[in-house]
Image (tube, rainbow, N blue to C red):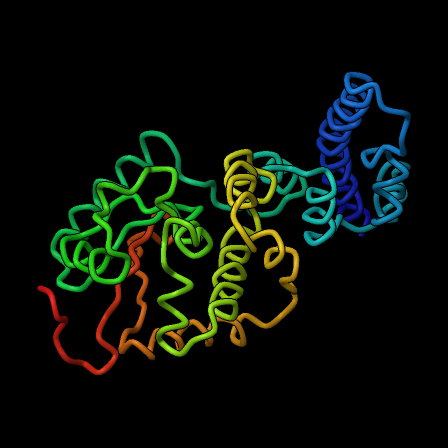
Amino acid sequence: MTKINDRAGQINAAFIAAAETIRIQRKRAFEDQLWHNKQKKQPNPFSQQAIWAEYPTYKRLLEQRAKNQVAEHVVRGIASLLECPTHERNHLLRSAGYAEDPDILSGVALDAQIAQYQSLLDILVYPAFLVNQVWDLLAINQPMVHVFQQFLGLRFENIPEQHRNILHFMFDHEHYSARKLLNKGGLQWERVARSYVYSFQQANRTCQFESWYQEKITSLMQLPDFERIWQSIDPTIKAHDMLSQIQTDNLVYGLRTIYISESDSYTYPRIHAYVDATGTKPEHE
């Protein structure tokens, strides 16, 4: 028992050292921001008291009174309070003896994956497109060219790159006709939009403190209705209840969405393909 307690103590000490390093950085940055903006002094959300108010275990860890190894859900919760991006959250998980989350692909590794998926995209006979973590359309295949022309009246290559995003198409009513298209099919645009926003939030639930994710949300917030629907989503709702709506809505047009990923470690990039739900061949091959 003593050896177990000693090991737990060592792990807890490593974790609290890592957490305190990050916490102090956040605390100082918060104070610097107040000073820079000439704002009145405010309660610091990164003080020790603020952290242990949410997780009393933090105080016991600081005082070396915790007898058991800090639980993984506590590590993740503290990482969230400290607004840790993936690499910092993984540092905390590693210091506490837990498996790390997979990093988001970037740089050369991402380029290699995109090239691999592009080859697969080109041989698919169904309309399909390649998306990244924030649902930007990186490429489409020839059958999908016809879909854009038929349903949106647009040539994909003429769409500005900053608009090539699933949610942008859904909410930018001035330039794209997603609302009109869905209503024409007898659907409720808002129900579908809510389902898509929910799916987007769930797909990025571990990325909320990544700068690229925050930049994408800031951009989408400029679109009509996006902020209202974003704020209205209940993150605790069962995924099946929301995602089944998307499948039902697709079936109105005789389509079913399938997702193609060739990596066990990374969800994105991935291919979205629309296959004929009735089993017949696609209109455009």
